Length: 474
Ligand SMILES: [Fe+2]
Ligand SMILES: [Fe+2]
Image (cartoon, rainbow, N blue to C red; front, side, top):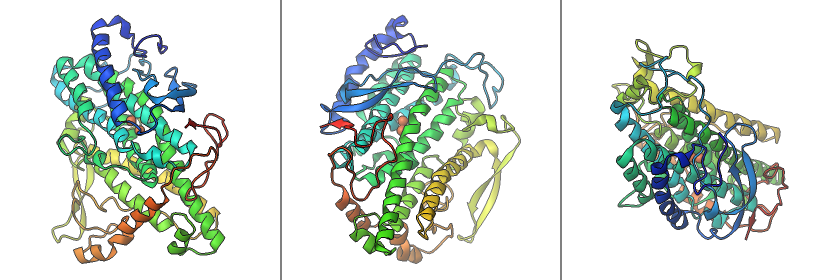
């Protein structure tokens, strides 16, 4: 169905036909706008930003571009088209018709899944609210704001489900989504990663590469859900999410390219000298990859989880790309899960029921997806004649969840002593000195087409515009 922009809340769900829901959402809308003005990008609310807006929900040509002040962005409710005769694709309800309403026995679980997903969306806007002030170019600033308004829309997507299918409980949850704030000591966001402020652009690029990609995998799992409205809303969110990861992948690629250019100019790979020439040396990039990859793995939850098993059995949350698996029921199958041996250093494999290992199955898919960008960056480094290879650390490294939680492990995956950890930690994770250096680079660049010295220019602009287009009118 086409998106209706004539209404107060743009939508393609025939909102006007459901007066009660429309009224409830119209009541929530001003609270959302207040939240956006208080917690959204600081200092740019009255500026014209070149943004895309959804015009339809099919894969081709869904976006229109134009200047908008962010508080005027047309946030709304957009669901992918309903697939005809869609059947449940996994678990105990395999092959049955999907649900248009929530079965009573799954209400609490689905509410929890939707609220947890919904909470991350505004959280990331809050985490990134100061980054516009240190944007390395107008092009990058615009991309940041595009991500921010889309995360705001993802909040709308989850709030629509809460209001539309959960009655009073849902309305209360929707209010609380605007009351919790990232980093708020009294009322923080649900997941800890979403309470860390992002104070530099290297972290933003890592966040959009690794943490938004976790979001992609969560959405892929929810897109499999037997609860059809959840599946449809997640399918459309995924098309928006792709841009966020594009910002991460190209952003990190540009950091790496700039480092290589400087290394070639000065004919040295000495990190100190690379820094003297204003670039971010590759070992520092590697330390940031180590940090963000490991923290994003934790978002998948425990390797073994009865919650995950129940979500799968009941049809609430499937595996990413469920179609690709042979067995969609996994009743008597097992899956190997790593275990720390009794000697405290060896690693063994324990076979557990596959259903209990669903978090791990999803995480494996995620790790493979993370490798794609790494391979691309490594090809670029090689092409520029530099002898250096970036890699993902072992999945056991720096975990706070699962069998290796709080166990000292090297990036190669070896269990090590506290002493060895202390000796090497500054080579493995961003140090205070790294952070101070990165911060010293964070200066706002406002001349269209100019890019900060630590970052290579992008290959192309947005929507066929040149790189020096005035993406934000300051
Ligand atoms: Fe999102
Ligand atoms: Fe995102």
